[in-house]
Every structure is written in structure tokens, then in C-alpha cells.
Image (tube, rainbow over all chains, first blue to last red; front, top):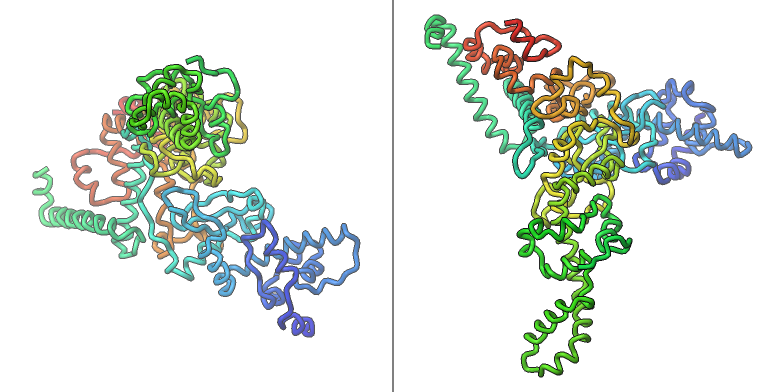
Length: 263
Length: 338
């Protein structure tokens, strides 16, 4: 094992992984470091998940030298891709993995948010489950905090577990500077310029939810991450609110009867 | 005006079959021929007359009136030339002119068609045609995961041409999206207009908009079947069927960020801030403002849930407050309570 390590750690070209990440449809994957793949600790539990685990691992690390027929080779190839995906989900939450995915995110290699108001904000791949073969990969927009289906059918067949449910949230905890400013901008259905009653009531309700949240956060002195100009308006609003609240408190504490009489 | 409405080579049908023009409906010639429908477009489109003739497949060569007009125009241009000369040269010159201006007229015709289209799809015949296209899923599906591929409608964000391209309105999440294919990024949004999307929902209130684009035909979905007979009366809220008011929103249809299975707190710097955008009251009756106005004691509840400051005055005003009953109830049953 040791020789094998020293052999592959040198500037040995990673044929299989190079081929894998550059092949069509695998644009979302980043290249996993040799070190990471060869550390058995990182692969804990995967041997039960992947068929022909050892051969698959050998193939991924370019030390595969088994003489076998094409059918067997194909099966191992499939296992190798599965193994790579599962390790990938673990790798992208490591420091180096996050950095690699960050690069791809900055280049918008995962696509851009289809929502008009997000103004083509770059997306991040994510899974809705950590177990394989359940849900296909989805794309997360940090601006509207929603998930979308990939445009291309070659991406919509990738297993979501190869990215996991946590990566796209961890990346913003590690790089808080990346969190985009949120926007209250939204689409309002209109007919000849007039708002439509039913959607408008829903939109009003949603805005009141939003305002409540921002007030909650303001009380806790947490940055809500909304645009500054809106923040100012909001700040004035909530200051007034707070003053009112104080007044009420004074009324209630000082003279409850008086307060009620007034009303 | 013996236009070739039946032939497959009409300008309108060839325009609508162009790549990227899949969203367009074929405007009926009756609609275009009614001058009332074209009010005001003359000033918006260059070479209006020629463009209109192109759309209607009126051949200027066949048209005697047209010839005369051409000659007059040319006569004006070449004042110094003799009348005979002009007349002899006229056919050639027109050919020349047609060749050089064809692209201008073509683009004018496209603009004019688009602007008429904006009006046409809000007319009875037009919206009917668009509904057929909607049924067949011609406008694509919502990219949002929780909308589960419901069909979208083409809309513009402006009624003025040249401002923005066509977008897709998802009636399930009431949001607009960029069409997935880049070929639609050359189609002007004004050709569909701001009104069509919402008007469509009000025109066809009985559509089950939560039906996926994949399973196209098949009457009413299971959802509408599930509503019991007693629900029939309160099926509508603010003029819209309850099941059509943001069916892709609310609990279970919102993304909750989690890390290793734990929800990310709102108090985190990277915590959720946009959940309101995809939220919907658990009890949609909360939005029925008219009913709530009639029963003010119930209306306090939603305002009071999160905001202490605001409720205190209303509390004293409203008097005894009842707990919201889980079924939401119809206004009738509340009155019975009181």
C-alpha cells in the first residue's frame, strides 16, 4: 500500500479522473485529490455501497490492471463512477473541495438561476437526499434560496447524493462573504396595469411574513442581508414600531386603567 | 384583399413556425383586418402599410392601387425626371426598392405582428388558441423543483417593445422565469404583454394548474376530485379557485436548508431569508379579506401571530378573540358560533 501511495502521489497523471470530469454531462463534478481518495478513512462505509469496490477504487486511482472481459469492465466502470460520486459528496465539504467548487461557482459552471428577479445568479448543485438512487441533482440559488431542475437532460439524471444535502449550505457558512444580498423584488401579476386580487392578497401576506422576519432579526440585531436602501426604510419603520411599543408598555405599566379608558 | 388564408405558405403561419417563435399564436386575419384592433400601431411601426400587407400576404404587384401609390412616391422623389421616364423605370425601381427594403419591411412586419399579437392573445379567440397551446405544453414547464413541472405561460414584463425578452410565468408559484432555451432570448416580451398571464388565469378558472406538463390531457386532476361537495361553496377565494391560488407554494413545497439533517437557523448569517417568497398560509382562508372583514375577531389572528406591537391596540378593540379553528370554516359557520 505504501509503494502504491508514493507512486501515485507524485505527478502521476490522473487519467481516469481527468477523463471522468471532462466527459460530457459531468461538468458539475470537481476533481478529487489523490490524497483524499487513498485515505481509507474518507471511504468508510462505501465498500458496502459499491459493487466491486476494490476494482472500482483501483480504476479511479489509475492502478487498475485486471484482465477481464468487456462486460465486467463495463460493470466496474459503472461502479467506479458511482464510487467517485459518493466520495465526491464527502470531498466537496472539505476545505480543498469547497475551494474547488467555489471556483466553479464563481465561473457559473453550474448554470444560472432561471428566476428573472435573481438576475442570472450562479447556482450550486445539491441533492435532496444523501442516500444514492433516490433523487436526481438539483440546483440551488443562494439569492432566492430555492431549488431548480437542471436545464439539460444530461444533468438531470445525475444522482443528487453525489453532492449531498449539506454542501451548498456549508459553503456559505465557510465563505459568508459570498452570501448574495437578498432582494424583495418580485413579480406581480397584472391585468392592464391593475393587480389581480387573489394573487395580490397572497403577495401581501407574503410581504407581511417577510417584514415580520426582518423585525425579528432586527430585534436580535442580526443582519437580514437585504439591500441597504430597503434596510433604511425598514429601519425607520421598525423604529416607529418600537416607539409605539414602548408607549404601550408605559401605558400598561403606568396606568392600565387610563389606557383602557382612552380606548 | 383576396388573401391566401388556407395555403400553408401564409406569412403568419411561416412566421409562427420559425425557430424560437413556438410561443406565438396564429392571429386570425379577421382580427388583423379589423382596423379597430390596430388602433395606434401605425405610429409605432415603421413602414406600417407595407408591413401590414406583408403579414396579410397582399402582393403589391397584384394590387393596382398599390402600384399607383408607388409611382406617386417615386414621382415625388425624382421631381426633375419626366413622367414617361418615371413610368418606364418604375417597375425596375420598385424591384430595386423591394430588394433593399425587404429586410426593413420584414422586421417591421415582425414588430407589427408582435404588437397585434399582444392584443390578440387577450381577445376571446386568441386566449382560446393560447389555451390550446398551453394544454399541449407548448410553453414549457416551471424549472422550480417544487412546482413539479407544471406548465407555464409566456409573458412580457413590459408592454413596450425593445425593453425585455419573453419570460415564462408559472401560475403555480406566481413567479417569472427565463425560458431555458436561448432561442427565446431574441423574442420580445412586449409581443405577449403583461396582461396575458394573469388574464389567462381568470379566463380559465377551472384549469387545474397544478397538473404536470407531462400528463397533458385527462379532465380534472385528482386534486379537484378530492374536494368534497361541501367545499364547493367556499371553493373560490378572492375570485379564484382555491386550488389554483399558488398550489406550488406553502408547507412541504418550500426548500428548507439543512446541514447534516439539521435545519439552518434563521439567526445564522447564512440562514434562510427568502422563505416568505414561497410561503402560503396553512389555511388559505386567511387571505379571504372580505370574509375576515365581516368577522373581525378572526382577522386579528394572522396579524397577531408574530407581531406583538401591532396586535395590542387591535386586541383591545376586537374584544374577545377566538382561536382559529383548524378547518378555517366558512363565514356561515362562524356566524352560527357568534
